[in-house]
Amino acid sequence: MKRLEISGKTGQSVIMVGEKLANLSRYIPPSDKVVVITDTHVGELYYRLFPRGETIRIGTGEAVKNLTTVQQIYERLVALEAGRTAFIVGIGGGVVCDIAGFVASTYLRGVRFGFAATTLLSQVDASVGGKNGVNFGGYKNMVGVFRQPEFVLCDPALLTTLPEKERLSGFGEIVKHAAIGDRTSFEFLENGYEKALQLDPEVIEHLVYSSVVLKAAIVNRDATEQGERRILNFGHTFGHAVEIITGLTHGEAVGLGMAAACRLSLKKRMLSRQAGERVIRLIGKFNLPVRIRLDRKAILDALRRDKKREGGSIHFVLLQDVGRAVIEPVPLVELEEMVADLFETP
Image (cartoon, rainbow, N blue to C red):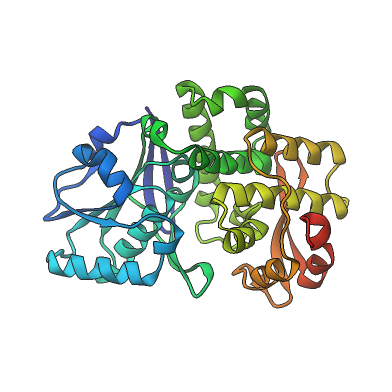
């Protein structure tokens, strides 16, 4: 097992890569009530490994990531007489971790919480960094807070039960981390993508840990996304828009978003064609889409609702080279002119 500590304005967190879900109880502090928040699928698969306490099960998918679900959990917590010394554990993927973290951060003005991340995406991204939130009114992650879980347990053995699409979704974020700030990991992915796709234990542990190290370093320097942390949004501006209008998985949408961001970087003459093609080729090696036919009006409407928008521009993450990203305001008018070239529009 490898341990990594994140320490910042929003709290301290210990990430444990390679620890078993069966050992989760060791990390839960003394509490008058332990409440597990999970989804129906994870609950069916792993309930026997859960720590003793109460369990609240929610549905699956982005459709349940809203204030209605949060309200239902609040009502259960009140019925369970959970007080300020309660400890909440989110066991699941990104949706569960986002909801559990938001609930724990707001119930009784904040109770302690931790995560056991059960998907590759949540292990490398969603459960790390202290972002907790839900969707609202068609806007992704519009309502939320910054607060670190006390721990994140990442058990690679859980990944074997994931559907292929969910595994690929996680690889999308791993490629993102390498592309924006870790050239060594990028080269490792280029050479070892076949073993990664086969979930080779050593390769997966290396990739998860490398991703967490990069993200943790950025989060430690910019906990509330005032500057540098914005580079973690590489591929997400277009990706979130695609996710909203197509129903693709997060990783598929981010793969498309990264490919589009590379093309935009090329058009702005910030990135060499060779480097851009390397990134797009690696995205494709992980069976993620790099081109899609989209309705131009729909994609522009979604971009206008992006929470990173300020006035007539969006803080956009572009690449200068493999492993080197920059943040630049891009006018919406400029994006509107380029959308047809960045994707494929009717």
